[in-house]
Amino acid sequence: MKYTETRLSGSGGQGLGLAGRILSQAAILEGMFVCQTQSYGPEARGGASRTDVIISVKEILYPECRELDVLLAMNQASTDKFACNVRADGMIIVDSTFVDQLPEGRVYEFPFTSRCIELTGKAIAANLMALGMLAGLTRFFALETWTSAIKCTVPPRFIDLNLQTFEFGHKVGREVLHMEEGRIPMAWDRKMPVPKAIRDKFTR
Image (tube, one colour):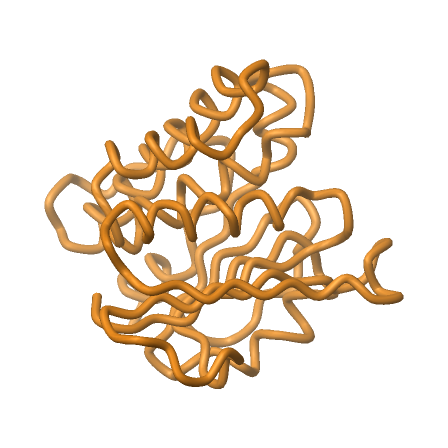
């Protein structure tokens, strides 16, 4: 990874700012340049707020995202608003708990919020589950770098919960990636539809 633009988007209160700080910290631990910006505004409640993270091996001269390599969308509003900003070869990850109208492109869907509630009894760590799947799919950094970034960023009383959900999401992401690469048989037992990117691969 020499340069990448990532947008983490959803409603206010879904923890995308924290997810962005963890992503930024992971890049810093790897010795990379990072620029993080956040947008709250009047849309923070139920609309499409966002956190943008630019990561580069060189100094970042322009702080705004122009073409997204990765979009994480935790609700329908952010999916509808930001999918058009993703590169043709970029990646979109959506929370199918709240997103039922998928955009075009390379799209991965998983019910982060509902699955997080099943696993932990609360939705508060769905952002870390989504970030874990993003980490597994993109392979930006080693798992150890991500877990170190979480420990540096998350309040101590929430570290175990966040590590649990992140590692679950990371495992799901790696399984999906291995299916795409044909490294494991096509099987999906995660109480969810098969990701769109895989459906497209096997129905062309």
